Length: 368
Image 1 (cartoon, rainbow, N blue to C red):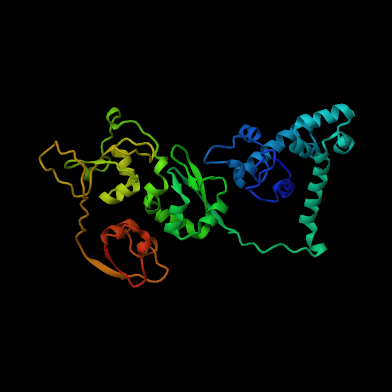
Image 2: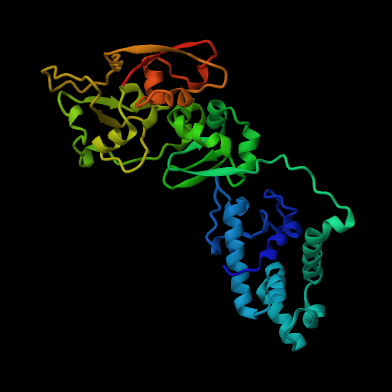
């Protein structure tokens, strides 16, 4: 946004770099945005999300706000003063003093703002010259390297913690904008920030994460979708599944597309295509058409009752046994066998919980 890099030190005096900081007036986050200003710069604030606490989103908004203030005054010290007390108070000080520089209007500014710019200059000076004064920074315990994953399905920090083994407190520290430990991505795309070493595991185990104790963690977050009777249903895109009758599955409490797909040996993309779904959102009682692998035409086209037990027939061909080693997970094991996925291994060995893997355990793996 064309802002000086030194403006990054403003949060030091605004919030002491605490994303959870809230002032007596209600200003929130690293950059201490008021609700109205935050909304003006498109920061989401609702029951579940407060992007004023998001270091990334709030920093982008702050840069835009500061740039807008600079465009008004063409002076960064006045822009910083206006960031603190609002442009209205700065305009009054300019009008009363008849001057247009910070130090000339100093005595006409609110008391807090008189100390604000000097405090910023002091913070900037200390950050640049701390070594000259024998000041040593604290050792960082916060994860330095992180990755961002964009989610389109709601998930609770407890689900991520249980499957990946990352502590809930670390998830909260990296994602302070989520107020109730839930990423409510039921009709939006929302970010999840993880330490870099967990990124590939999340991607590999995401179906297990979304399905883990889903009804317990996300009971109240299933979004309503149109009744399938009023929606045009797409034809299956994979010809190998078009023969035979479809199984009509009735969605239960706690279900999600990942768990249903795993149950029937299909993919989430196939479920969405067969049922004309444009997102991962489903509701209890909804009917889904599923073409499971190996389904045969039974001759009775009226059979539309829910299948209680999906056919998970083992593939034919050669297989080997793999002995689980310390540090293994389904994704790392799958990488050793071309064409094999972590979901394949779990299905072949009738494993539903990705956390149940133990050193010494033997897994049957079919060659592809």
